[in-house]
Length: 427
Length: 81
Image (cartoon, rainbow over all chains, first blue to last red; front, side, top):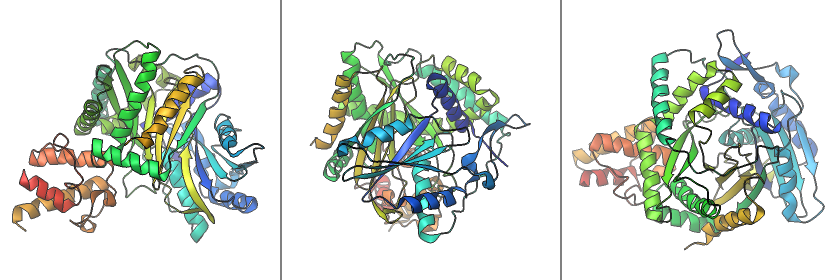
């Protein structure tokens, strides 16, 4: 059985290849549920194993079909690997919960068929359940949606109705070639001069994290200020604008050359109708924002610039063209995709990573325990080697700073973290 | 309600349904956009449609919550331009 990979899937596979070449660890991320109490270990393990057997795709791996189209090889459910759940109790205080969770996202999977590992962390008074996942199989929204389906399965014992099929997309070549031409021009225009980017050491090093949990009151304040400055449904442009301003200070202090920033922002392409069917694999495209450095401190100008670029890209159907053009990459092997990506984007395609995720886990409980918060620990690819990720669970925002030691020192990371936290205190 | 306002409302509802891949009969004119599942991306898609269909660039003219409170209020704003 096979599931054909889309062009976006193939690019994600390429990022996984780059990450493994650099560090031996793939393109992983982790979604973490903070629970009021820990679920029973035995029942959690039993139920997860039963649930995961419903998804034979979870033990697959990429391969290439006779028609040259890459696909995800699906093995029989009978060959399902048992799911790992690590249980950890840090000896010290509550603040150490992040260390075991971060250690897991920095660890390689045990073999090529393993794509999920669970970590249960219990401090003196807090409980966290982390699901480390392979980005080739789940994107961030898909990971939350997968846990949402697990909870539905726990509650009604009915397996989710998900179709795993995907056409080979070996048709409409004119449309794909025209999209390729459009995106080639778009990227050439975007990178006609190298954007500002932080230098990093090409060495193996663990990805580090800072997580800022804004309180409900801080989150409400941030939401209100975003609304008053950026307008209705414009939280993402506001969060991006303020993040650019915060990062700009660091770039200025480090005297990084260049007069523009380029920030790719992933956007979810699932329709409401297909959200459940499209839980697995990758369903996103990108906006690319190019911001001149001169007027960054002028928030009104910066917001207008971001909103205008977003509008123009939607109007010119850039996100759709990225998806269509990416199909053309599938003919190339992963090392060749890596080569082409570097060539096309002249090694620098991002000053830093950024994303905003609205919650896809829409349950109050996980098994029988109350869910208090959800946040993510994504390993940022190098380059750019640093990323700021906003996510929302119910009425609460979390901001994750993902970075490598060779990019910025502790003082600079502290400065960014404090500025991000201050977003929740602005009037 | 005058016929032009009703026509604008109907066009908006059809477009929102197309963007969100949902049944247009489930969209009520009184429904706030965010409650229908409209996010930043789908909202901008709607603004692009409004520019093409009604020749009004709302992204530049400010996005107040009052204008977008419901499909009906958005239709009124377009009708009043």
